[in-house]
Length: 372
Length: 255
Image 1 (cartoon, each protein chain N blue to C red):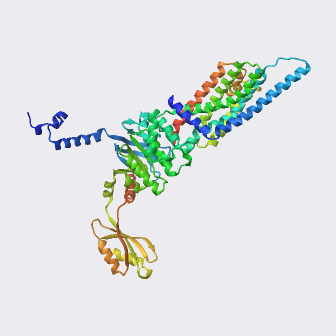
Image 2 (cartoon, rainbow over the protein chains, first blue to last red; image 1 turned 135 degrees about the vertical axis):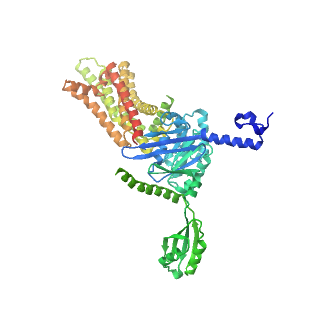
Image 3 (spheres, chains in turn orange, red; image 1 turned 120 degrees about the vertical axis):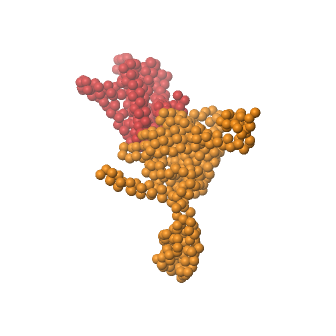
């Protein structure tokens, strides 16, 4: 009998039983990794394009979403988020390119796709004259549920989305937060593989926003979720991956952490200074800060009677905070606050979208040259 | 089929939860009741006058009451149909609930049929009021029920065609008022088109009068089931529902 080490690992599951435990675990991981590649892609979008008579709303977008992921769809208003989502939900047919949900093409097998998708549009699609439970029942029936299963699902989603206490209330009378949650409840009633949420927290108050975010995070285990938003902290808090689009084009797709790391070229520090006797000569203070070694740029962000907040940008890796503090004290001012400003997704986003447009500007003259 | 019924039930629900259905039923009941009372009073007075003059001409409930009243219903219906259909799609488009229907695993045609069927049922509900009045004729007189049944069939077919037109127009706009007004205009036009046959016999006049929905009701009103007229209504229903499906599809390509 041969030794375990001599086995070729592809020979079959039975033979791998002879492998040491750690090797078996390793092998399992490899299989799982392969499975992610081949089996567990819930959404595959390739060169998806939507053209209207005069504009191109979505321009050759390609991305993939694995099972169980929460993906944030990020972009300014009018970037093409809703259009992309509508194409994924079979509401709009793409002009060209393909989109597959759970292996079904949105153009060729729309009914199969629709069965596997739960969709919450920007305004929850509620019938004002219906009661919550009645409405959820209606949606459940539309999605193909019936009988006791339907009743169970209605009770379940009411519980899960915290709308059980308004079951008998008219939808027209619900507050915005409840309406949003009923919208989420109708999206998950048929336990879809994929959840598509278009700006799920728009127009809610901060408490409701937090509740909705928690709810979405809770749902992530069972469903693959795409949510669109133009609020950046939301993506930082809820999503694992971000897809940034701008003017219909894909700008970046990566994990939140990678994006932050990628974009952090410079570090910036916020410094709040107060002058003696409530008066401060801003230009002099600014000059003083600029003279600190390692500082590349100083911006006065705010200035109110005798106090000013400066944003100080420095080279990556240079520790300027101590020098800044010293410079302030030497200048005879009080140092009220000194903190590093973390690169928020907002800045990354602006940086990426701006880079895009400046590159486009750079490209255009060369094109003209070529034409000449 | 199941999906058609789901949509239909929901649609009927919204008719009867809102005041729409009750308002239409009340107004229709009042108006038809007045017509009925008028026709009956005229019939009774005429009968008494004849008795006083001593001449006994044959009097017929079917000919003198039921037939003109059915003709009236066919015209009154023109005014009620826009109010039934105007909200069908326009309201869904305005509130955005159309996105729910379109992204559910259900065919466009099932949505359309469900809504049209609900409109038909509400219209049939209106006709029920006329049946209440006619029931008195059967209690105190002896009219023939067969022409009446054919008349009702004609009314339903005519309404089916007009409701299909209304459904189609409702898919074109987000605004209920526009949908209602446009449907009303089309209904009236399809009524008055028939008038040209009164003074003109050229081909164009015959085509126009053939297009009129009310001219095709005349035979039904008399209690005659003419296949020509039945085919007109049935093909109109099919055509307009088909156009509704096309319009709903084009919503997606355009919006």
